[in-house]
Image (cartoon, helix red, strand yellow):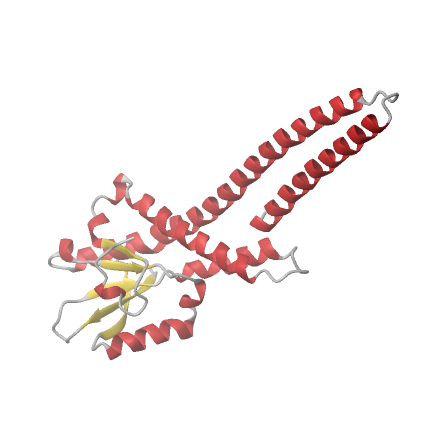
Length: 244
């Protein structure tokens, strides 16, 4: 369910309420015009029906809003959970084993403003801009001991002997495109660009919040200080001082 679907349901209840009010005025006018007609029972029924529709509409709207919010949170929780357990935590723990001063290491996770920032050409543009800022950017492969799997991460430093900064773009967020397309597929008769953008922003924001919430768990006490989640500064997030 999308915000548009919710708006449609709210509109139905609003028009139903208006229809009841109009009917009440019509019957009241008929009663005034012809006092011999006893329309009081009908007016009483319409008044009661109006109250029921208002209460029912309010209840249905709240339930649907709750459902929409739960759907958004469950999707972003699944993505954040997978990113944390399958990538971020293993990589940071692997790096800590290799560093002489693991507590000083910072691994930056850049959260985009929109999904377009994570397309391959957009990421290439960010890397180019970092190079223009005199950063030496490398993609490094981390091999896990006693395991066959490998994971990539990026590093940046001003000089060959300079301090290394570690960072990653959670491109798993691009999965949201399929989710949003599925939610919007019933609206073929409209131009949902604004709603798609709104949904994307909400999902991305919730992903960042879920990631922060997961980091607060006790099992991540050892690596929490190594992880910095940034949501601003597309070309200068390495210099950002404020975390999400």
